[in-house]
Length: 167
Image (cartoon, rainbow, N blue to C red; front, side, top):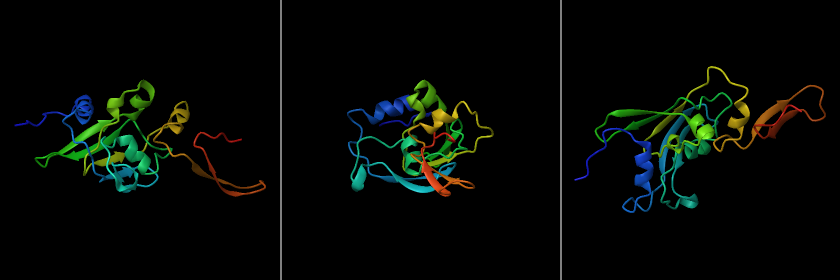
């Protein structure tokens, strides 16, 4: 008999997924990502490319990357992960990816389970000193589209890195 854990412990989850008795293969599954990502909706996560399997469960940052990355207005300090427990009760897990970026707290990059729902809220205010760090994060998009207008040789949409200066 293996009892159910009473509380969510991200450190224990990481240890269990790498234990010798953990499942050797994790099939891809769907999660829902809404809020401040470029492609909200249902996304396939887990497994390796080409539909094969992987031995490590997908994480929050991998799911965000699959949704096109965070938008410039994302509040990464108050991400909500909703998960249905085995007894049908919804569990809410609060995630602070800023702690992952600034302190290296890998427990914030929670392993996902089938049926999880991720909500990334909009920030109430943006700290200009943090913008560069967010733009360089692995879960930020590789490029953003900026519209250039007025007195320029080639007006229109331009794809640039998120941390590109105005010049």
